[in-house]
Image 1 (cartoon, rainbow, N blue to C red):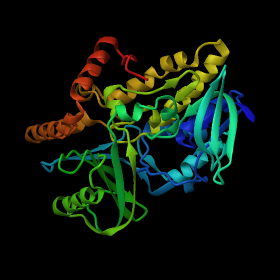
Image 2: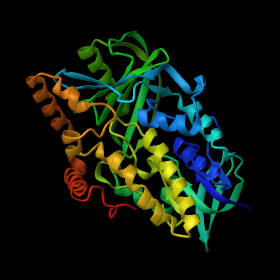
Image 3: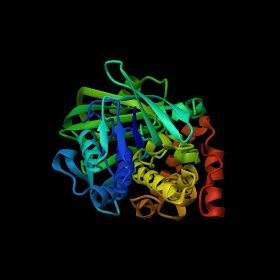
Length: 403
């Protein structure tokens, strides 16, 4: 049985960031992933300026193969039912359009951690101060490791999270997010921007942008609804309202998502020497970009492990103290008070709003309020309000609701 300092589940950007910190500090670290690498990753690929800076500072310049075409994105455009549109450039300038299949693999290799792909996480057992991690290879062979620290960086449907909190998936609402790829006949939408619709009749999360000569049309909605009907409704809307003409979809993909934790400060960070990070922990920015917070929270997980060993303290306690900064940055993006009175995003929404006429501003505010009502059934209103007041009174979000 192989014994190492740390095992990371998930060859993701969060996993790469954790591994980079640990390997640089001299920890023997293994990353396991159930897929053969490089593996496909469902993602829009539009990285925020903050995430881009992290990659440059920690992993170096991005190779060309890690980018889609168009290779760069200027910012985000919000569209509303009133037909008002707001284009906002990112504060940090243009950002890369990552090809996640190759970008993740590049970052994981740059971390210098040992990589065991085609290795599925099965479960864990605590044994004194060690964790026995059971995995399975494609031929059915079970392989076990012993480790001091286990890090779950395996996405929203995290098997590591389920291993330590079996009931967690039942405690939050789940959404399905799917996107289809269309050859373009005519598309007036500016290809340099990520386009997002605040429209309650289109879905809980609706977007479109150019990729490799095709147009992505994506929609997120409550799990259990019909994806094809939801998607076709969006395509029809784009044709009717934005004069977008597309060929029938040639490819589709989708996955389950955990939108709620960042809105209501309901994160899950682990138990004992098991740490949860990235989107597995619940981090997701407002425009659905989870890569930047995955990188930063993953790095914090690695730093917490290093600090815990140096100071001979509980890694869970240190991690929860250190992760406060990332919780604050991410949940601020959903905080109504911060959106109105501050600039929590990496594009200037208040300035774009003030550039509109008074009539257009009223329409935008009305449309946003109507869109927010989509989430009423999840009873998030009071929870968002409570989190907002905590932030106002304590200058941070309290950790009493975290797992």
